[in-house]
Length: 321
Ligand code: UDP
Image 1 (cartoon, protein in one colour):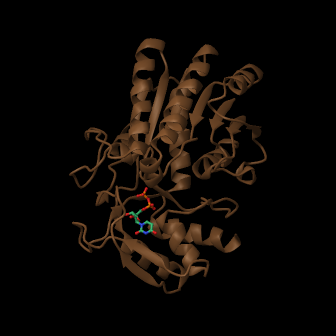
Image 2: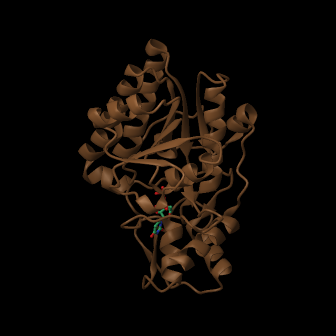
């Protein structure tokens, strides 16, 4: 049995939908930002906090868990600057409690959702895992702290882990049954699509004076189903004891500017966006594009979906919801 913490969230629920095809899955989620309706009906659902020792004890005693996949986190850069306590509490302290309770029950395989925000402002075209980690906000720092904890726990307690550093997750499941639903929404692609659906008056482009060809920020968008697949590859590597510890970037290796993403959304939907150009959003690096060569080399994973499919799958889901 696999425990998926945060399995009712955007990325967690997409992973669960794939994982239930081959494994018995227990989802632990406090539904603070997730939705029970996103959890596949084949999974066992437990409502509760990952920082709650009693619930963890109950879960690890009742179910025979062989690995834990941890998606539950606060993940907004701006919010992390306003309220760092929340980020260190939810992302670091609660994760420490989870890890401690895993080890108490002799569960030693762990997959951790990390982020490109651990790199800070890298000065390279393609970011590989050898780049220095210099996060520039509490969100990135909270994730990097857990990465350090995992390193130490591996050396001292024999924890086996895979850290997956996501670039920009986007898109929706091919069934259009589940998709990206944050309240409030802050992410670029859902904001553009909500606008094109008539749910927002306009979209704002945050900054046009970046050192990029069109002046807007460049990101590497990766389909959420590709992310889910990478987790399954990583899980199998841990279950088969092929991996002791590893850290991988997950991206497409191709960057798109904010303007290019808007153009793609207009193309896919056949609708015209009303755009305003505003100041930069604090904390945004100009360019974040992944090299995912390492996970291709070691686990044979690579992203299958490109931006057009990411946007069209998201659009299908938006039209249904
Ligand atoms: N962005 C924007 N307008 C919006 C939302 C986002 O211009 O309404 C930009 C943002 O500044 C960043 C890119 O789109 O350069 C991707 O932002 P998002 O919040 O989707 O993801 P992040 O890169 O912060 O994880």
